[in-house]
Each structure stands twice: as C-alpha cells, then as structure tokens.
Image (cartoon, rainbow over all chains, first blue to last red):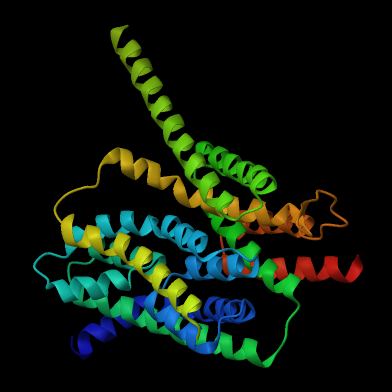
Length: 239
Length: 107
C-alpha cells in the first residue's frame, strides 16, 4: 500500500482514531487496575483488539472471574463480528489470504461502520484503503491503552469509581442495542436471569448462561412474531 | 508476565479472531444462514444487560436494592437517560463518574 491509500484511509478514519484515545486510556487504566501489567496490556490490545471485550476482561478479572468464563464470554461478545465480517466480505474479491487475515484481525465495530458505508457509497474505496483505515484505528487503540496503563501505574484511583466507568460504558452499549421493543425485552430478561443465576451459582458463568438463554428466547419470540405477521398478511390477502 | 495471563490473552485472541476471519475466507460470495444471523443479533444486548444487571444490583456480593447503601443504583438511572439522549459512550462515562463520585461523597 502506498502513500495515497494511507492518506485516503486517514481522511475517513481520523474521527475514530480520536474517539479511541479517551476510551483506550480508560481501558488501559482499568486493565492495569485489574492486575495486568503494561506488557500484558500491550499484548492484549495487539492480539485481541476488541474494545468491549477488553473492558469486559478488566471487569471480570476485578470480580475474580475464572479464565475459561472470561474467554467464553469474550467469544460470545465478539461473535457479533461474524455478522460484520460476513457482510463486508463480498467487497474483498481476489485478495490474498494474508491480506484477508490482516483485515479480519483489525476489523472492529467503528472501522467496520466507516468501511461498509464507504464501500457502498464510494466507487474509489478499495480493500487497500479499507485496510489502511483499519490499521490506523488499530494503532490508535494499541497506543492509547498502553498509555492508559502507564497512567494507571502512576496514580491510584478509587476502585468503586473506576469499576463504575465500565458499568457506565456497558449501560450505554446496552441502550444503543435497544432498537426495538423485542430487544428491550430480551435485555431485561437477560439481566434478571443473570442476577438470579448469580445468586444461585455464585459464579460468573451465570452471565454466559443468561446471555445465551435470553438471546435464544429473543430468537424464538422474533420467529413467533414473524409467523404471526405472515398469517395476518395471508388473512388480509384472503379477504 | 505469568503463564495464566498469557493463556488468557491468547484464549481471548483466538476466540475473537475466528469469528472475524472465517466469514472473510469462506463467505465472500454467500450469506450466513438467516436463522443464525437472527439469533446472533440478540447476543450483544443480552451480554451487555447481563454485565450491567449483575454488577449494579450487587453490593458487597449481595443483592441490594437500597439506593442509599448501593451507591451504583441512582447513577445507573442517570447513565441510562444520558445514553438514551446522546448515544455517546464518552458522555455516558463522564456522567457515570460524576454520578458515582457524588454518591460516594454524600453517603
């Protein structure tokens, strides 16, 4: 990739790069607080590169969760990338496997949104520009989390407040998911299930069970609703 | 860095990487099954709700819905409102910090 691709990528992605700075700083501080050192933070951002997943790891580590439950939870949380990857894949014809591997690794919510929009609206936007946008956002995230960890190592912070920053962030992500009534219902169901299971099991695996159950119930409700709609549609046609 | 931490990072890296890469590799000309996509669309909302509820309603490892003892409850109501109005992660975090700090100082 030449200078042109990097410049084009930068023009579109710089708002994401800027927004990653405060989030990355917060994430780095929380990861440090959760007992992950600077090298660990660097390695995690480099190899995992998933904002919400890394925030969640910090939160679950602080709550004393076991490694397998963090990994399982990360899997489910990041499963949404499967949808993003599937929808953007058709724009990547005739590219080498290493190219696809690198693009996939750096695929994240914000850059996906920008790239998908670019592919749809801009004929000049090619996979090379998309990759450069991804890599720029990626480097902003890795840099910010490491600096955040460094700040966290120099100052001590109130742990109740620091932990609450996470909750505030997850609350916002939750609210952003409320796109229709059924999503609100599934959210409440999952939350209530998680609390009940936590009381019974005293283990963070409760969150995984609650999320899987609630999302499946959401699926069933949606299927039911669609069926009803088709039946009603047929009834109207019959009249 | 101890091996537990390295294991955690590698575990997270692997489970994050495959959902990103597999569709890129095999689905470039196809769509994923509709039913699977529908189920997956409910996963993020479920996870965020489970994370928020299982934290906010607990205080000292017990369910506590007294807003004066459990200082997380009222700020969460505020953050819900801010998130609904602004959709912004940053504003939600800022108001969350202000809210929780206020509660800690006063109660």
